[in-house]
Length: 297
Image (cartoon, rainbow, N blue to C red; front, top):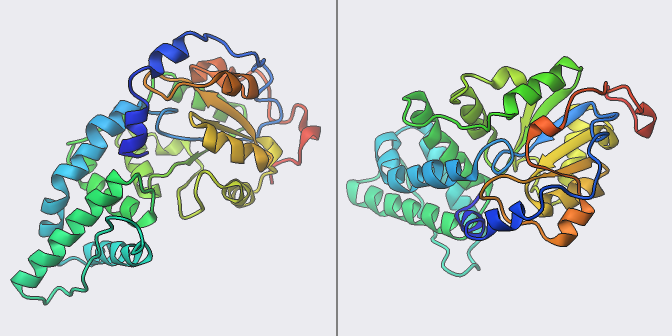
Protein backbone atom coordinates (compact mmCIF):
# COMPACT_ATOMS: atom_id res chain seq x y z
CA UNK A 1 0.00 0.00 0.00
CA UNK A 2 1.37 3.41 -0.97
CA UNK A 3 0.90 7.01 0.12
CA UNK A 4 -0.53 7.86 -3.29
CA UNK A 5 -3.01 5.02 -3.23
CA UNK A 6 -4.08 6.08 0.25
CA UNK A 7 -4.69 9.63 -0.87
CA UNK A 8 -6.82 8.42 -3.79
CA UNK A 9 -8.95 6.47 -1.35
CA UNK A 10 -9.92 9.49 0.69
CA UNK A 11 -12.71 11.93 -0.11
CA UNK A 12 -15.69 10.46 -1.90
CA UNK A 13 -14.81 6.81 -1.37
CA UNK A 14 -17.12 6.27 1.56
CA UNK A 15 -20.05 8.05 -0.09
CA UNK A 16 -19.78 6.14 -3.36
CA UNK A 17 -19.58 2.79 -1.65
CA UNK A 18 -22.49 3.51 0.69
CA UNK A 19 -24.85 4.09 -2.21
CA UNK A 20 -24.61 0.42 -3.14
CA UNK A 21 -25.33 -1.76 -0.14
CA UNK A 22 -25.28 -4.99 -2.13
CA UNK A 23 -23.92 -6.13 -5.46
CA UNK A 24 -25.81 -8.19 -8.06
CA UNK A 25 -23.84 -11.35 -7.31
CA UNK A 26 -25.07 -14.13 -5.02
CA UNK A 27 -22.25 -14.76 -2.55
CA UNK A 28 -23.98 -17.63 -0.74
CA UNK A 29 -21.99 -20.21 -2.71
CA UNK A 30 -18.72 -18.33 -2.88
CA UNK A 31 -16.98 -20.79 -0.54
CA UNK A 32 -18.22 -23.85 -2.42
CA UNK A 33 -15.24 -26.01 -3.33
CA UNK A 34 -12.79 -23.56 -1.76
CA UNK A 35 -9.85 -25.17 0.04
CA UNK A 36 -7.70 -22.05 0.38
CA UNK A 37 -8.66 -18.46 1.23
CA UNK A 38 -6.05 -15.92 0.13
CA UNK A 39 -6.26 -12.51 1.82
CA UNK A 40 -5.03 -9.05 0.97
CA UNK A 41 -4.25 -6.86 4.00
CA UNK A 42 -4.78 -3.12 3.51
CA UNK A 43 -8.43 -2.37 2.93
CA UNK A 44 -9.37 -6.01 3.43
CA UNK A 45 -8.26 -7.32 6.83
CA UNK A 46 -6.89 -4.01 8.05
CA UNK A 47 -8.11 -0.39 7.85
CA UNK A 48 -6.27 1.73 5.34
CA UNK A 49 -6.00 4.40 8.02
CA UNK A 50 -3.69 2.11 9.99
CA UNK A 51 -1.18 2.24 7.15
CA UNK A 52 -1.80 5.93 6.42
CA UNK A 53 -1.79 7.21 9.99
CA UNK A 54 0.73 4.90 11.64
CA UNK A 55 2.97 2.74 9.47
CA UNK A 56 4.02 5.15 6.72
CA UNK A 57 4.45 8.19 8.98
CA UNK A 58 6.62 6.09 11.29
CA UNK A 59 9.00 5.28 8.44
CA UNK A 60 9.16 8.87 7.26
CA UNK A 61 9.90 10.29 10.68
CA UNK A 62 12.29 7.57 11.86
CA UNK A 63 14.26 6.44 8.80
CA UNK A 64 17.27 8.67 9.52
CA UNK A 65 17.35 7.66 13.18
CA UNK A 66 17.05 3.98 12.22
CA UNK A 67 19.99 4.21 9.82
CA UNK A 68 22.15 6.06 12.34
CA UNK A 69 21.44 3.55 15.11
CA UNK A 70 21.91 0.42 12.98
CA UNK A 71 24.54 1.58 10.47
CA UNK A 72 27.19 -0.89 11.61
CA UNK A 73 24.85 -3.88 11.50
CA UNK A 74 24.93 -6.34 8.61
CA UNK A 75 21.17 -6.22 8.12
CA UNK A 76 21.20 -2.44 7.73
CA UNK A 77 24.03 -2.59 5.21
CA UNK A 78 22.12 -5.24 3.26
CA UNK A 79 19.09 -2.96 3.18
CA UNK A 80 21.24 -0.10 1.88
CA UNK A 81 22.81 -2.35 -0.75
CA UNK A 82 19.36 -3.43 -1.94
CA UNK A 83 18.23 0.20 -2.25
CA UNK A 84 21.45 1.06 -4.10
CA UNK A 85 20.90 -1.78 -6.57
CA UNK A 86 17.29 -0.76 -7.13
CA UNK A 87 18.30 2.88 -7.65
CA UNK A 88 20.74 1.83 -10.39
CA UNK A 89 17.93 -0.04 -12.12
CA UNK A 90 15.76 3.07 -11.79
CA UNK A 91 18.42 5.51 -13.02
CA UNK A 92 16.33 6.59 -16.01
CA UNK A 93 13.38 7.53 -13.81
CA UNK A 94 12.75 11.19 -13.12
CA UNK A 95 14.02 12.30 -9.71
CA UNK A 96 15.60 9.01 -8.69
CA UNK A 97 18.16 9.36 -5.88
CA UNK A 98 21.25 7.22 -6.38
CA UNK A 99 22.96 5.72 -3.32
CA UNK A 100 26.78 5.94 -3.28
CA UNK A 101 28.94 2.95 -2.40
CA UNK A 102 29.92 2.69 1.25
CA UNK A 103 31.40 0.48 3.94
CA UNK A 104 31.15 0.48 7.71
CA UNK A 105 34.77 1.73 7.79
CA UNK A 106 34.07 4.95 5.89
CA UNK A 107 34.90 8.27 7.53
CA UNK A 108 32.17 10.34 9.13
CA UNK A 109 31.79 12.72 6.21
CA UNK A 110 31.27 9.88 3.73
CA UNK A 111 28.87 8.11 6.08
CA UNK A 112 26.72 11.22 6.44
CA UNK A 113 26.66 11.71 2.67
CA UNK A 114 25.54 8.14 2.03
CA UNK A 115 23.04 8.20 4.89
CA UNK A 116 21.38 11.34 3.52
CA UNK A 117 21.21 9.76 0.07
CA UNK A 118 19.52 6.67 1.52
CA UNK A 119 16.96 8.80 3.37
CA UNK A 120 16.20 10.78 0.21
CA UNK A 121 15.96 7.56 -1.80
CA UNK A 122 13.48 6.04 0.65
CA UNK A 123 11.29 9.14 0.65
CA UNK A 124 11.43 9.33 -3.16
CA UNK A 125 10.36 5.70 -3.43
CA UNK A 126 7.45 6.29 -1.07
CA UNK A 127 6.39 9.49 -2.84
CA UNK A 128 6.59 7.72 -6.21
CA UNK A 129 4.22 4.93 -5.14
CA UNK A 130 6.94 2.27 -5.41
CA UNK A 131 6.30 -1.30 -4.26
CA UNK A 132 9.84 -2.51 -4.82
CA UNK A 133 11.19 -5.22 -2.54
CA UNK A 134 14.17 -3.11 -1.42
CA UNK A 135 11.88 -0.47 0.07
CA UNK A 136 9.51 -2.98 1.63
CA UNK A 137 12.45 -4.81 3.19
CA UNK A 138 13.75 -1.71 4.97
CA UNK A 139 10.26 -0.70 6.06
CA UNK A 140 9.70 -4.15 7.50
CA UNK A 141 12.89 -3.97 9.54
CA UNK A 142 11.92 -0.56 10.90
CA UNK A 143 8.43 -1.69 11.84
CA UNK A 144 9.83 -4.75 13.59
CA UNK A 145 11.47 -2.62 16.26
CA UNK A 146 8.34 -0.49 16.61
CA UNK A 147 6.10 -3.52 17.08
CA UNK A 148 8.45 -5.24 19.48
CA UNK A 149 8.68 -2.17 21.71
CA UNK A 150 4.93 -1.60 21.67
CA UNK A 151 5.10 1.66 19.73
CA UNK A 152 2.82 0.12 17.10
CA UNK A 153 0.11 -2.55 17.33
CA UNK A 154 -1.36 -4.20 14.25
CA UNK A 155 -5.01 -3.44 13.58
CA UNK A 156 -7.56 -5.84 12.10
CA UNK A 157 -11.28 -5.46 11.54
CA UNK A 158 -13.39 -7.18 14.25
CA UNK A 159 -15.04 -9.51 11.71
CA UNK A 160 -11.72 -10.92 10.49
CA UNK A 161 -10.62 -13.30 13.25
CA UNK A 162 -14.03 -14.99 13.79
CA UNK A 163 -14.35 -15.57 10.05
CA UNK A 164 -10.87 -17.04 9.72
CA UNK A 165 -11.45 -19.36 12.66
CA UNK A 166 -14.64 -20.52 10.98
CA UNK A 167 -12.82 -21.25 7.74
CA UNK A 168 -10.17 -23.21 9.61
CA UNK A 169 -12.81 -25.22 11.46
CA UNK A 170 -14.27 -26.32 8.12
CA UNK A 171 -10.90 -27.59 6.91
CA UNK A 172 -9.76 -24.63 4.87
CA UNK A 173 -6.34 -22.99 4.91
CA UNK A 174 -5.76 -19.24 4.99
CA UNK A 175 -2.82 -17.41 3.40
CA UNK A 176 -1.81 -13.76 3.14
CA UNK A 177 -0.67 -11.99 -0.05
CA UNK A 178 0.40 -8.38 0.38
CA UNK A 179 2.75 -5.86 -1.19
CA UNK A 180 4.29 -5.49 2.25
CA UNK A 181 7.13 -7.86 3.04
CA UNK A 182 6.42 -11.21 4.66
CA UNK A 183 8.21 -9.94 7.75
CA UNK A 184 5.97 -6.86 7.89
CA UNK A 185 2.91 -9.08 7.52
CA UNK A 186 4.00 -11.31 10.38
CA UNK A 187 4.66 -8.30 12.57
CA UNK A 188 1.21 -6.85 11.93
CA UNK A 189 -0.56 -10.08 12.82
CA UNK A 190 1.94 -11.21 15.44
CA UNK A 191 1.69 -7.97 17.42
CA UNK A 192 -1.94 -7.12 16.74
CA UNK A 193 -4.50 -5.51 19.01
CA UNK A 194 -6.13 -8.98 19.04
CA UNK A 195 -2.92 -10.65 20.20
CA UNK A 196 -0.69 -13.03 18.26
CA UNK A 197 -2.71 -14.23 15.25
CA UNK A 198 0.05 -15.95 13.29
CA UNK A 199 -1.27 -19.41 14.11
CA UNK A 200 -4.29 -18.65 11.92
CA UNK A 201 -2.24 -18.51 8.73
CA UNK A 202 -0.66 -21.34 6.76
CA UNK A 203 1.73 -19.01 4.96
CA UNK A 204 2.53 -15.58 3.57
CA UNK A 205 3.38 -14.17 0.14
CA UNK A 206 4.81 -10.79 -0.89
CA UNK A 207 6.36 -9.13 -3.95
CA UNK A 208 9.17 -11.68 -4.04
CA UNK A 209 6.52 -13.99 -5.49
CA UNK A 210 5.53 -11.34 -8.02
CA UNK A 211 3.55 -8.13 -8.30
CA UNK A 212 -0.10 -8.32 -7.29
CA UNK A 213 -1.22 -6.93 -10.64
CA UNK A 214 0.39 -9.81 -12.59
CA UNK A 215 -1.51 -13.00 -13.42
CA UNK A 216 1.58 -15.17 -13.11
CA UNK A 217 1.94 -14.21 -9.43
CA UNK A 218 -1.33 -15.95 -8.60
CA UNK A 219 -0.37 -19.02 -10.58
CA UNK A 220 2.84 -19.22 -8.55
CA UNK A 221 0.89 -18.97 -5.31
CA UNK A 222 -1.49 -21.74 -6.38
CA UNK A 223 1.48 -23.95 -7.19
CA UNK A 224 3.20 -23.08 -3.91
CA UNK A 225 0.17 -24.01 -1.79
CA UNK A 226 -0.48 -27.15 -3.85
CA UNK A 227 -4.00 -26.16 -4.83
CA UNK A 228 -5.83 -25.80 -8.11
CA UNK A 229 -6.60 -22.08 -8.65
CA UNK A 230 -10.29 -22.96 -8.96
CA UNK A 231 -10.25 -23.99 -5.30
CA UNK A 232 -8.74 -20.71 -4.09
CA UNK A 233 -10.77 -17.63 -3.07
CA UNK A 234 -8.90 -14.31 -3.14
CA UNK A 235 -10.30 -11.38 -1.14
CA UNK A 236 -9.02 -7.92 -2.04
CA UNK A 237 -10.25 -4.34 -2.24
CA UNK A 238 -8.35 -3.60 -5.46
CA UNK A 239 -9.83 -4.40 -8.87
CA UNK A 240 -6.37 -4.32 -10.47
CA UNK A 241 -5.53 -7.28 -8.22
CA UNK A 242 -8.86 -9.04 -8.59
CA UNK A 243 -8.61 -9.12 -12.38
CA UNK A 244 -5.28 -11.03 -12.66
CA UNK A 245 -6.25 -13.44 -9.89
CA UNK A 246 -9.43 -14.27 -11.79
CA UNK A 247 -7.43 -14.65 -15.00
CA UNK A 248 -5.26 -17.16 -13.14
CA UNK A 249 -8.40 -19.18 -12.43
CA UNK A 250 -9.07 -18.18 -8.83
CA UNK A 251 -12.40 -17.17 -7.35
CA UNK A 252 -12.31 -13.49 -6.50
CA UNK A 253 -14.32 -11.22 -4.20
CA UNK A 254 -13.95 -7.48 -3.61
CA UNK A 255 -14.12 -6.01 -0.11
CA UNK A 256 -15.74 -2.67 0.64
CA UNK A 257 -14.40 -1.03 3.79
CA UNK A 258 -14.55 2.55 5.12
CA UNK A 259 -12.04 4.69 3.24
CA UNK A 260 -11.48 2.21 0.41
CA UNK A 261 -11.44 3.43 -3.19
CA UNK A 262 -14.96 3.64 -4.63
CA UNK A 263 -16.06 0.82 -6.92
CA UNK A 264 -17.49 1.63 -10.33
CA UNK A 265 -20.77 0.29 -11.67
CA UNK A 266 -18.69 -2.06 -13.82
CA UNK A 267 -16.84 -3.34 -10.74
CA UNK A 268 -20.11 -4.07 -8.95
CA UNK A 269 -21.38 -5.89 -12.03
CA UNK A 270 -18.24 -7.94 -12.60
CA UNK A 271 -17.30 -9.11 -9.10
CA UNK A 272 -18.92 -10.42 -5.92
CA UNK A 273 -18.64 -7.78 -3.19
CA UNK A 274 -18.73 -8.02 0.61
CA UNK A 275 -18.56 -5.40 3.35
CA UNK A 276 -17.65 -7.86 6.11
CA UNK A 277 -16.00 -11.27 6.32
CA UNK A 278 -19.04 -12.34 8.32
CA UNK A 279 -20.97 -12.45 5.04
CA UNK A 280 -18.95 -15.52 4.04
CA UNK A 281 -20.61 -17.97 6.39
CA UNK A 282 -18.87 -21.33 6.73
CA UNK A 283 -21.82 -23.56 5.99
CA UNK A 284 -20.19 -25.33 3.06
CA UNK A 285 -17.33 -27.81 3.33
CA UNK A 286 -14.30 -27.55 1.03
CA UNK A 287 -15.27 -30.86 -0.60
CA UNK A 288 -18.65 -29.66 -1.84
CA UNK A 289 -18.74 -29.16 -5.57
CA UNK A 290 -15.11 -30.30 -5.75
CA UNK A 291 -15.69 -31.22 -9.35
CA UNK A 292 -15.28 -27.56 -10.20
CA UNK A 293 -11.55 -27.91 -9.72
CA UNK A 294 -8.78 -30.19 -8.65
CA UNK A 295 -8.64 -30.77 -4.90
CA UNK A 296 -5.82 -29.30 -2.84
CA UNK A 297 -2.93 -31.64 -2.27
